[in-house]
Amino acid sequence: MKPTTKSIPPKLDLGIDRALGMPVYLQICQRFKTAIAQGHLRSGDRVPAVRGLAMELNVARGTVEMAYRILADEGYLQVRGAAGTIVSPALPVSVRAPAKTGLARSTGPVSPEHDNRAPRPFQLGLPAIDAFPRKVWNRLVAHRLRGSDASAFTYPDPAGYWPLRERIATYLGLSRGVECVPEQVFVTTGYRATLELVLRSLASPNDAFWFEDPGYILARRFLLEANARLVPVPVDQHGISVEHGLALMPNARFAVVTPSHQSPLGVTLSLERRIALLDWARANASWVIEDDYDSEFRYTGRPLPALKSLDQHDRVIYSGTFSKVMFPGLRLAYVVVPVNATQRFHEVCASMNAGSPYLLQASVTDFMAEGHFARHLKRMRLLYAQRRDITASALADVFGERIAIELAPGGLQIAARFVDGTDDRVVADRAHDSGLGEHALSRWYMGGEAGTKAGVQAQSGLVLGFANMVDADQAMRLALELRRVIDA
Image 1 (cartoon, rainbow, N blue to C red):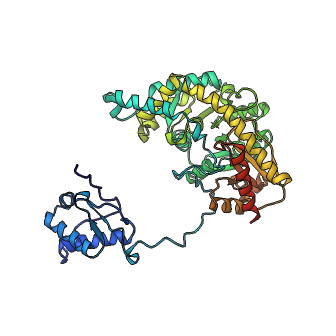
Image 2: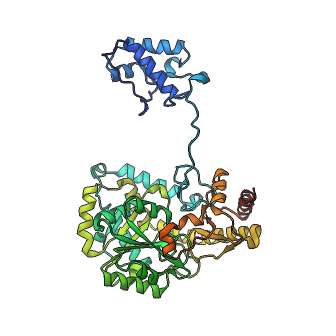
């Protein structure tokens, strides 16, 4: 069988300049040597076949053959006959790409878990990868692949796959008390894409945003990059303080909140404050962006109704995601918009051409329609309750009175406060170097002049994910590893 050839890597520029006095075959040699020196080609990488490269560069086949012979004689390439030509595994160290050094450590709210690597212990924002029904999912995806008609190969609807929007509307009405029709549901590629859609549709320059302090790091970063004017509003055991928000910026245009399971503290917004927040939005013609990111997982009683379910004046923009209930690799989320803003959102979606891939949307639709989604949620609630308990127990046994843990009734993470004033940022950086994935709690606070003005005092602690904690032995081993890092 004729071996397949590897295409030229995107960073490998083999363009030929015929105006140069240097022969073409020597230019090809020089381009390959430069690519190897810069690390774009590494030992063992397969290079394009002679015929394919000659056609791509529009040169004679003999020219490429001569260049390859020279590179092979000099030790850069290794010719393996029918198996193709590769960069020599015995490449001299002197011509390899030097290791990158001196890169500065980022001191900002980094998100190292978004790197397509295996889950880290205590990693945030990640459901139980080991417990997802992969066989069922693979069967549904394969079925869609085999049965796709021509429409599956066209551009997707920017607002989302219609049957999925129907399923989401039905699900939200039954489980979250959110009454909506499919026309109000827009499928996005994640919470960041949801925020971008909201800002493009409704926001104006210099709009002020109430933002929970502490609040979701990645949302804060995106909003600041979008030049939103954030007003840090303190969070206590009852959720965001509407009273402080009114004192700080009564005419804010938006409020970004996580009422069911506050991120990162885990508290629930009280009914009194929910009503106060909705009254403010109605009186001020403002918008409330409700991030309902993991409310499906509540371990005491039934899941609480969404803030949107109390919204009588259509001021709440409801955001949900499949990243926590299924897996983040889907890159699928959704937003329910007010009726009077639906047309505007459709127009912005069309201009952004932001449609999600048909295959994934259709497969999620089947996953919901066949009952797998509901069964998976039921299993995960039981599993996460167990994993939360063994994680909290291990941390308490290892750290004792050194940390304070107030278990929230739901969610996929634990906020543990240091009682002795330990520098959580130093701990988090050391832990990341050791392969752990927790976050420093103090980084979730806005800080600076804005935080001081709001009267917010950053707390020291760690935010730890527990969804992938398999058993008590692993929890104890990782808690001991975390203590070793702290005591180092």
